[in-house]
Image (tube, rainbow, N blue to C red):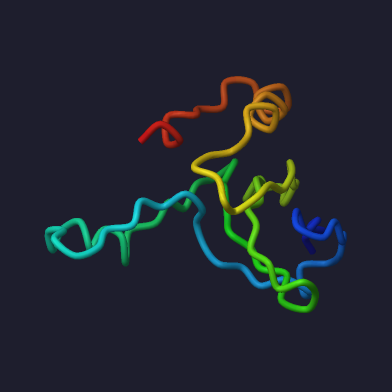
Length: 110
């Protein structure tokens, strides 16, 4: 079971107190986008074996959305951060790099 910390209110609890919202940092396409771009936004998601950035909502608490960096194989949670960001904070990326040398950050620059 995952143990998550809500970035908004600071509560640490089991994942059952939260609701997963899928992949974080998706580029959203709106009016005027091509059908391929919109289809990609709706259906194409990363499913990595390793480090993944996800959206979570503190459903049984403050109700706020936040992002979590975790390892999909070990369920290790590296940290949480505000959902109002365009990417993970540099200090979190450094921590992940220390724990997972050679981890690729290429998907963050896309």
